[in-house]
Amino acid sequence: MTTATPDRAERTRRGPSWFAALRDALDRPLTSYYLLLGASAMLLTVGLIMVLSASSVYSFEQHDGDSYAIVKRQLMWVAIGIPCAWVASRLPYQAIRQISWLAITVAVVLLALTARFGVLVNGNRNWLAFGPIQIQPSEIAKLAIVLWAAHVYAQKERRLGSLHQVMVPVVPVLLGITLLVIVGRDLGTALVLFAILLALLWVVGAPARLFTLALSVIGVVAVWLATTSSERRERLTNFVDPFKDYHDAGWQPAHGLFALSSGGWFGEGIGASQQKWGDLPEAHTDFIFAVLGEELGLVGTLLVISLFLTLAYAAIRVATHTDDPFVRYMSFGIVAWLLGQMIVNVGMVLALLPVIGIPLPLISYGGSALLPTLVALGLLIGFARREPEAAQALAQRRRQRSAGLAAGSVGRRGL
Image 1 (cartoon, helix red, strand yellow):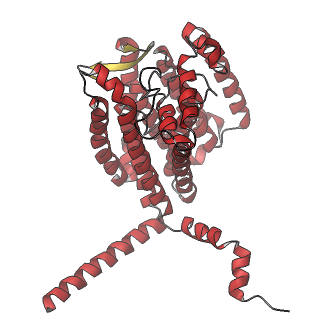
Image 2 (cartoon, rainbow, N blue to C red; image 1 turned 180 degrees about the vertical axis):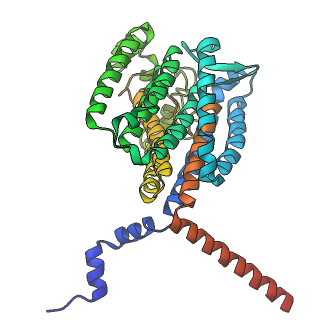
Image 3 (cartoon, rainbow, N blue to C red; image 1 turned 30 degrees about the vertical axis):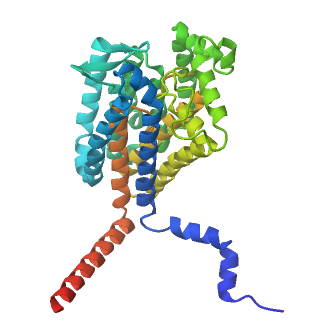
């Protein structure tokens, strides 16, 4: 009878070698940092490629034959957003928290101005014009809400056992902001704001009965708001079978399904989409996932979804490894925002949810959505860099690099 060696016994206990290697890789100090940085960069790259492809026909028709007009604007926002994300990743926690009240104040003012003076686009008054520039304040409000609520809850960390402390002032302020969004008839963004609120309440330990009540109220209000608009009512009643009203309310989801089904496993190739030639409305914004599926196939869609799940995993890892309540609440809030929005957008394209006008983060065209998203990811990357073990590993790497440069300089002088 042979006895297993200690090494073999340890390998048997830990499982297959690939699983052990994966677990070791995920346990490294800089895992969250590299996952956030890599997944964000890949999603941004895929987004630029898909905006270029999905918008080419629309740009040619609407911008005097310039097929690159839309993607050039997106590149401009990327050029602005990446430095903003870098600055956000380097800001100390205290500085981030100090701007939270300014952020929520600016968001409320912009939303109030939008409700009164906003520009009507596709039936929603959710755009605010400043000369030739139009912004969507509700996208800015998502980041402001997460930032401010995380700051308030971090201040109340020792008092969150009280329901009153959990509710006030976060819940009334967020409901007020959501009401301003609803006034602009933007039901999709309002639902995302509700999701952020519920996620934050769950993280701070609100009682379960509060969620039951909140979900019931949200469901009733959402259905009522949907029935106040004939367009929304048609979308609500036809989304399960878009082919029932193919030439009207079902046109967009039906062509989204056509795009996905024609993509197959590996897609038709970048630029080869047929649906973007006028059949699929909002091909470069809300329904860009359909074009992605048509051109990159099931493999491409699963890759994008996997990258979003990677972001969520890394952010939750940061939240569970930190002792700072602000970082914990901020990280969970950003996950609820980005992952929830991705799920709603993909659900719309797959005809699992009604079409409510929600863009796909980092992929869809739009500077108002892209800039706050990049700043939020910059904050997450900064949180990951400041984890004690990660900070120590980065400091050691800098010391080794400096030592290597110094040794090289001495060697050259010796020669």
